[in-house]
Length: 402
Image (cartoon, rainbow, N blue to C red):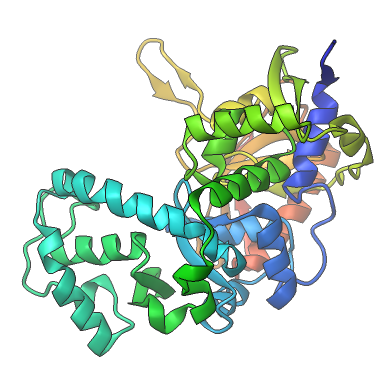
């Protein structure tokens, strides 16, 4: 029997809707409303780069322009409605999902003990008792509060001293919890003092099979359609083999089906979806015509291969004559209009001058940068400037590139 086929337009529409980009970015963005948005996305990736605003703040702002960073801080530090841990990278995760992170804690504890001993080349495991005693007596603490006098390696940013490595390991293993950040430096405390007791009760923890089932279901629901590998990669806890086995069982039970998804170049890729994916795509709202600035780490684009297949959006493009050279800088902001990627913009906050400085903008292939599109860009940049606390927008000479 022929497989259901989603054409590229329908696939983009469903995917954009599942990533909360199909409606106008309006409405409240604090407290329960902000938490509901994070639960809808699954998690929000954290990143320290702050050329304009931090990645997690840009992700939330692009979906709710009323969002302000203090609202996320309150959810974590005061309300304890979210916690920080690891998916494919550091992320803020709804506290309701905490029981299903027990599997990640166990797997990280097993994997990192050997990996980090080789990587950091230090005996960090001998520092566990001292670090825990320090946190117990002085917590919350940061990495600068432990390991005084210990020698750091010469390997750069990630070459930690032993107590810093122990602190990070104990967090990844679930023994410590990040309670907030100060100047983006993590503050750790004992998990038993932070997380609600019912969530920490081993008798209430789901078993491995339950967590695998929950994570695969939750990933597919947030993606709309996916390969087994993409389901595994969503939370980066379930292994590719476990996701493949789950897909086979769900397919046999009729709870998912195999479909064909058309890429931007017309190619077809087999994916899994809930029955009725075509109806879900047709029911998804028409994305608004306004232009949005996205974070380079936006969840809709973080899988670079999928973004290329679905949107024809190559995150990095290099030319190789006469020598390899990247066309775009590392941290450029994608521009979305409706369900299309229409360009990318290189800009930064010049905070001393109160200026949003636009250095370059590259329209995507086949996109004409019309006066109407420029007007939409200016409206969005004005919103972004206000969000970043800037008063003016300035364009460098020759900013519009071919």
